[in-house]
Image (cartoon, rainbow, N blue to C red):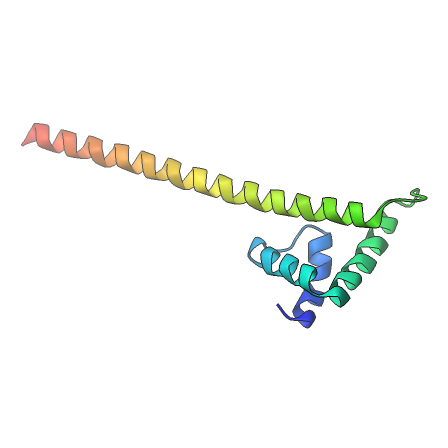
Length: 108
């Protein structure tokens, strides 16, 4: 991911609306580019202050790390659910086909 692409994805990341397909490259770029990480911290700070106006002090790095971990956990949970649903569909299809073959063999 380029710095320009990273910049476009900062707000969706902060709002937890970043596409899971882009999350890994976004976080990888964040870890490897100090300038973009600083930009993310600034935007995150501004967003955090707007949402939590009564906050007098907090640890920016800790809050940003929590936000990143939340995004990673949500992505993992999403993909685990997709895999579970896929396996469930495969199991149902297997049972359906087996039942069809069984009844077909009985009638012949």
